Length: 285
Image (cartoon, rainbow, N blue to C red):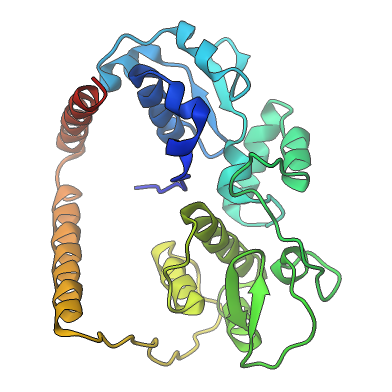
């Protein structure tokens, strides 16, 4: 199941607020269903099925400047790549695939220009403003690491990620420079889109994401146990335990779901989408 960043401040965006319910649902739908380059093969019949309302090409009038028609059967979300990836300099398979897809429609140059000159409305597209410590294409020089630092001091990578020099070097040794840079960009974009930093350790968060992404380990490095924050009160302990049990229950439900035949999975997804559409319709009446 793929995951994508979202801007939680969209609900304060005047443009989004003025969209009718059908247009809001279509915006969510196309953001989820487009490919890794923000391109969606037009299928208004499928959109109508999931949303529960008749969707036609007329709806694109609400998204002028945000959705571009590429040809007779493709639509492109203009700011998708800028928001999701922050830059396309890495050599990972993901970035290679995104660049290849954009090149098909002569969009790569336009996207790179937008990444290098992010607008004030382009949430999550910044690549850092501080000067780097050296030449090259690593995330350190691109993202803005200021001055020399000891191994145990935190260094700022991009806008929001902080690692010690030793932690960064271990990431590079373990997963390679490109993969380490991609992970840092993902965490940077995630913190930026959330508007807050909820992680006790960025290093251990990146290790967790690397395992989730099943990245190849180039060098096996024994890691100490991650730092633990001790609850300060019985009530907080109870809340943490409830959250832990809830997470375990959610994971169990997810595991059971993916054991089902594909046809049954699709049936349940459609059923849940219809229920969600019904709830949203009732909420916006």
